[in-house]
Image (cartoon, rainbow over all chains, first blue to last red; front, side):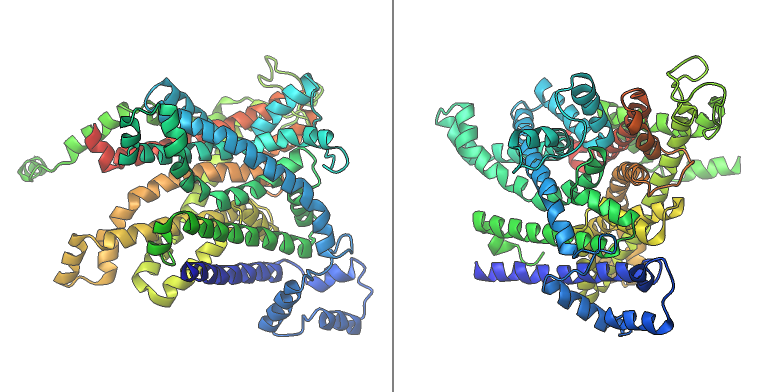
Length: 320
Length: 297
């Protein structure tokens, strides 16, 4: 087990390294000299002053030294300052994390409830109208763009019925109920496609488990189908469902970029769009790095939990 | 006549019955048929659309007020600048389809090459390519595309490139896995034993086996590219105005959701139908090509 743990962690490190190099390279490839952004639009600076800024930011060093300085600072939690607000990047991002995290958690919960139920419904009623209906809904759920679900939900629940606000965000700590009201629509929009993926995964995984001999044994004992599912099948069917958590987190953040723009939610997705628009590169780099690290760590955790739950994995699967 | 006798003299191959079998499998799958129908409809709209509409997609109606509801003159009303919404919608199909096809081509070809090199060179290069692909896949596709466009600037080609880079790892991964599996097949060992060189084995014998799963991925990839292009346009980082794209229609339409909901719902529905079509097509190809499914019929 220790060997497996160590192997997984060691496999994740180079990925993180390549991610950081890519993001660093991205920052260097951006149009315009970083100095001009730091100095602002007035170019009243003398040659010496520009050189001083370049030295201050280490821009006169060779590129690999610059990378080392950059990654060294990040390791100590120093992501630099936002060009836009002049505040530390960590501070700027920190206040934007809560809405995105809250919506992500809510979407994951909603998606799991909808997706797993649809998957079970579909697998148990294999090749009946239930299966067809669930398949149709998952296909539609996977194809529908956020814009369409968001606009339809907004028209119905915000503009016509006026049950929910169309945009804005109330923090959980200020007003829990109001917070739920402001985040319900974006969570629902994000959860639909995830639910579709989960339903598909649950369906195929559960159908495979239901073919196993121990299930036949359980049925032969005279257990009712619902008991077979609850006591025997679902436990094993959930394992493969777990593996897509990393993918889900990546998906949720990609989606947050759109939903937070539509619903005017001050989260990380909106911050990314704004920082791209304002060329606030320090914030942009930090956000992209944060997201990729989260995804890699989530995948690592999934691997570890999986290895813990399924002994076959840690014995057979090696570094692949 | 000479060619006819020659053709008759040729040994009769399997293609005909195989095609019939394929056609039968297609007919047995209503969802595949629906996918083919939706994609064909989209292509027709993209090709014929510009000839069917009476207005240019950027022409402003200066006589009537903007945001006009659907009428005989403007079947789907006009947008906030008084431009014909139907015309923009139909022209938008062309942009979406173009981005979809171009970015899939730009992603799949290097993806296939990268995947094959990874297996055949192996060793440290395989490790390097793998870590690189892992890293690319750690970024949400849309975020990666967004970051690339931020660097290279928004334009049609750059959007296509950005989407291609974001989807490249999926092709490379798929091909790598497939090549690894095919390489172990006995017929490949036999060809190698005969003395064929690696490059020849790769292109003549392995590549054909890689094509069909890639085709499936490509079909799904067009769907992804259409969504990604719309998302980038929606964020103002896609093909720049006044070009008619579904994403920019949605972006400007959202401000008038209360008075003219169709300006958002119509392009949104088009994206949905297009993505659904390509997803169903991809799923259908996968099932029709799968030998297990074949024997089940």
